[in-house]
Length: 246
Image 1 (cartoon, rainbow, N blue to C red):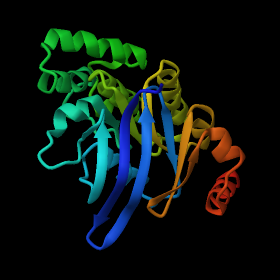
Image 2 (tube, rainbow, N blue to C red; image 1 turned 45 degrees about the horizontal axis):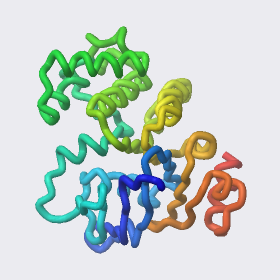
Image 3 (cartoon, helix red, strand yellow; image 1 turned 45 degrees about the vertical axis):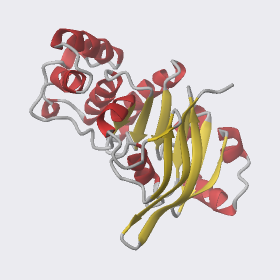
């Protein structure tokens, strides 16, 4: 029996009169690598921001181990430590070194000692190949290196799920591969991941579940073989054809 970590029920999100998400339903099981694909403006990043409680859904539920985290009064920080997020624009603290970036959340949210937090941070910085840069500030390293630090920072919080919001879209093409390689390693190690991405080869080859969104709804979902190899909806076929022709 698959262990369900997240269950999204009838999730909708509006900004004023503009409905960005409509009646979204899907589940995330332990060890799943779910890629969310679709054109820009289809609601993918808003969905991820709702799951991380950076946006509060207008209606519907986000169940984390059966508890609705979208309810009023729910305390987000401990949940965000367990459902971590890696942003398109890295979101590193520019006034802190690489190592300090990976220690701060552990000390503040997880209440770890600095010594313990440093040891834990170093483990993950080594894992993503950033140990030689621990004393650098973000402005002194490349975009690909910043994103690897952001991944290490998220991993240092010992998350159960990692959310990636277009983690390669702000990178130069030659840096995309180094970040995708880290993500592929995490997938192979069994990390549960939810990835908004335009990297179709990653969605096809690394994911075990693909969600295609169009105009604020889930248009089609299934295994990569189903969605890429035998799409059922015309919108999915059109999107994938456009992608193959770019």
